[in-house]
Length: 503
Image (cartoon, rainbow, N blue to C red; front, side, top):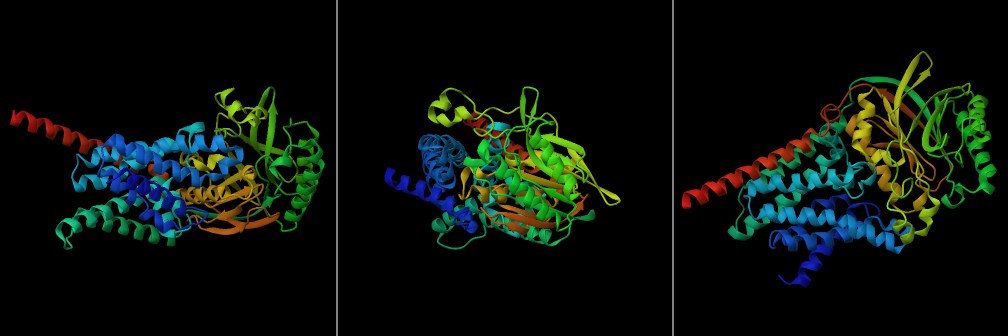
């Protein structure tokens, strides 16, 4: 195979992966998208596979996350090239494994390697980059969301890679023998289909532990990012929010939710803007959960604050994992040279503990967790909030940085998996959208589209039951990595024994 053909195959794989996500949203393509890359992986050495895998990743992330170019062409190129390295590592590792393991072992080892690398780049705190996790391409498809309640989104990625590898292995068997034969590939494909069937059944069932139903009003003001922090726009922004809060109150909700950083400036708890927010809760006699950029001494924090219907402070939560390059800019002054606007972005102080809010409603109390913006990308934070007693989850976000791009849809899709994984109904309130409500299976029930201004009303049922994923956490991917390590150990032991016998 010539170098040119390999380049075309690598780029084709990246292109098919792009089409599997928004904007094209052809999620079925992901079950075939890795086939061109597998042709390269099975027929090259690891260092060559690394190069072509990196090319696939660069094409994929460059196309999927085109909105990073809003920061400038150079940051976009650095992102695509840098994150593409993970695909290079996956391809190199897969090439090494493919040359040493049998068909049945490859069907387990290659997907486990892929899932492990996805976890590595997606769950490591502030430096994570969870966009492009293969499992997220299945948002909106109930069998995959149902399966996520057992094995999480990385388990869905594992199933996707199994299908790709099984199809490739089956094609190899067919090509060699010119006749159909039940093989390990057919068995793996059958298992994947059965797993998705299990997910379809799970999504159709009602999770146990149903509690009271509350009415939530989600306020979406659609304040443009280039106006959000302008002192000359503060009065206009506050007037808009006040009008929307009153509009929301006319629907008699149990709580009104405002998005991340709803107040258009960093404030202290005795500042006029903060007091105006308190006044809204008193005015409409309804509890308000709002995103507040808060100053505590010399520390700036991105917080969520809860007030009751009398304007009394109940609890707050400070974001624990800042958004990279939005709330924390590393490697100054190099990054400021690449993108001078980073000089205007100050680093926030991360919160230290997760707050479980308690809101008295009628004769009962609702307990819930809050994820601020990019925190809904992380499985661990959502699972932790549920494990500590959260009966539902609220996500508040801005998402105005990337205007009308597909970033907001990608974010919304990630939140769908937090609902499905934990069997909790989740609401997401965005400044510019998408705002909406997910049922406990991850299905969106009510939404307000990107760039619209208005109020979404959602009936949210509190839940106390736990899914298998909620109880077991990352057991599935960890188990896969352990099995892969065991297979490699057996292979290496067998090689040594063979050499010793031959010698």
